[in-house]
Length: 407
Image 1 (spheres, helix red, strand yellow):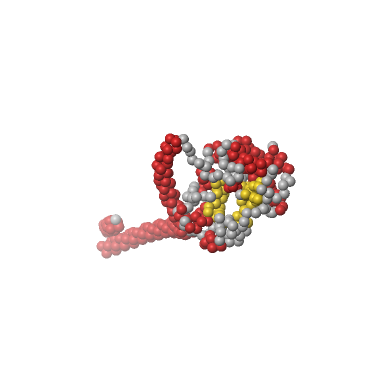
Image 2 (tube, helix red, strand yellow):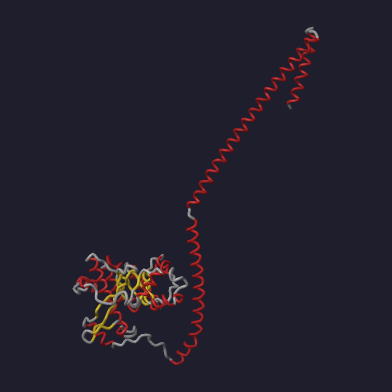
């Protein structure tokens, strides 16, 4: 384009020089100089304009490049902020949690498969025995037979010879008292005390009525004890047994609910305990009765757990705060209880707000083994024998509680 302009300037210069020669009468030299001057001037003007246009394009290119660099710098800053944010996320710990959850999920799936397999095997094994029972008209015998006659138990209850002792649950390694197990003992033959397995009635027939009466007396005494402990400024947590027979009976349940409603401030110190096998065999009304007690603020403990392959989240929602298992099984054959390593199971259960208590400890070596496994609560003869409570908690004159129970 610039060459075309220069050609046009040259033609104009020649034309003007020719016009000056013929029209103005200039000499050929003067006409040629005029034409040369016009061509040089036009060429200089064109070159100047061309340089200005080039400078403008260069400035625009520099401005555009500056904007692009600013955009790139801003993008780099944003990327740096995102990288810093990713660094601050501490993905290592989160990945560890995800890995642990995946491991737990795999364990749960394996446990479900094993449970289904065991259930199918048990059903297949029990089918012939069930047919034989139906044919002979015989059923399963009671697994426990008390040595004390039912009439003697009723007489002792009428005479107020049910003595409430306690067995401590201690923390490790400090060996401080965490809670107490209430142990209702029956006084016979003068001053002899017998433990519950020797006199506790079998929940059949009239024995069910006596069993409910014992549960009510134990609940009354437990509430009386924790209330006195609160008033003395040294609260204690008390684990007291309750039977499915009381949970499924509306009058007995209403009496316990009345006691709890009248002493709501101390209900968090009461833990109703059931045997694990009784827990698994609760009927729908019995489960509803236990849930009603939990709504009053009390907690639940499972004794003699034969497995730790449990839904701890579901147990926590039902108010379970303690699970007791035997030290012999936990230390000798932990694989029979759980798929976790014995040093990990306590921390895992604790995540759900549930305390694992290892019971029946008989030697200091067992305590050392539990310390290696991270167990925090233990119970047994080597930790503390069953005995009376503190004198300030054994006063029997509590008319307010009796009136609340009567209502």
